[in-house]
Amino acid sequence: MNHKSNTQSESNLINGSLLAKTLRSQTADKIQTIIRDSGVIPCLATILVGNDPASATYVRMKRKCCEQVGIKSISREFPENTTTEQLLTAVKELAQDITVHGILIQHPVPAPIDKRAAFEAIPLLKDIDGVSSAAFGRNVLGMPAHPSCTPAGIMRLLREYNIELDGVDAVVIGRSPILGRPMASMLINHHATVTLCHSRTRDLSSIVRRADVLIVAVGKPRFLKATWIKPGAVVIDCGYNEGNIGDVDFEPAKEIASLITPVPGGVGPMTIATLLDNTANAAAQQLDIKISH
Image (cartoon, rainbow, N blue to C red; front, side, top):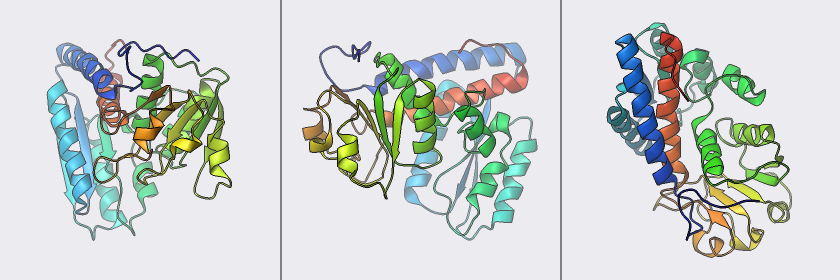
């Protein structure tokens, strides 16, 4: 594989923060084009249910990032005891509001809310995190739809660092519908040979050892051991655990991997930058404004 970096030449760290900064700048230019041509400010609506401190922090961060690129941000917050019906009502109201161009339901949604029903209530054009079955299916088939933000951000990183995917052996650990599964599909659509692993995968370490590209999204600190990594592999750590610790045992892993994402500063910034870009694209589509991608 060709691993030459466009952004760093002397380190094997993948600089997600730097690429995210570039993407945010491009998104800000899109926003200005949309405002100039339509007189409308693109708007992202976030929905937060419950009192999870991390989720509240993420929503504040997204709101701040929206302001930085010129996107209007509105927030709908609901208590822990919100019912599925109440949440669906809120989503449907935002779906019908022509001034709202993107809808994001912050994960996780507390039980016993039917989060799948809530995701399905988001219209395809406003589903800027690819959470509905319609968006997921279209992305799997390579059809137009807003992609899930984290895997789409990872694909941008792989492109930026000139990582050849055609025919490579890729392993994705984690099968969530917003990360692992769409990630596997995107890699397949770029002609990688993909193994999707999860908590019930047998002999995981032996599967990991053959991976040229390794995507780790399990939500367990230092889960992926350096001894599992094939020398020269590209390692993408999607984890963000307490204490700024990823899912990969980073220090020994970086001595073996040819390229690796740090935590923080790797995947995380790209997720938010992709969310902003998806929102700009959603607004352009709904307002019939032609912009370059």
